[in-house]
Image (cartoon, rainbow, N blue to C red; front, side, top):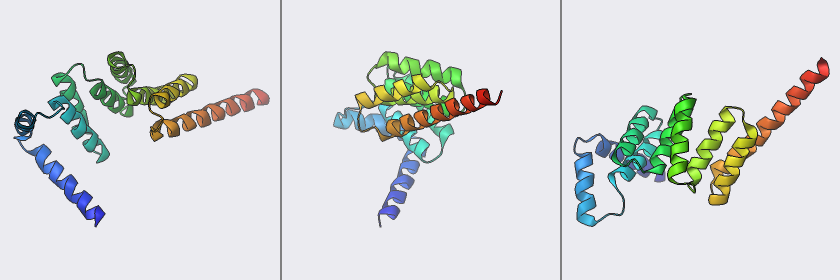
Length: 169
């Protein structure tokens, strides 16, 4: 069934990624078939798969290696920034996400991740603005839509609790 096929695909991806020949095999395939993506792009894809499988340490290494191979890869910087954010390293997250947006101002995922950082910091208007921009760039980015809804919800809760606190004093 579909679940078994997906499990097998993940197993094969893990076997390939853990192979000592993965990088050289990828480079050889890229040259043989004139593929349109680079080793850095492959590492971003691999990092995203690691992240989906809950292997954030592996994903972090993949994204760091991706930016070493291509310091202009805005997507790699965006995902690296989100890993930093999820680990609570807000300063590194901010620096990395801002680098991503400087490299590509129209990268929706970078704007979404920047919005998540703003949300973590309680900067609701900035978070909403980032999510809105992500949605302008990619109206189908469901995560940005959901995050914007959450930002409005948290902003309302904050305003309500502040009002209640003032009313009681």
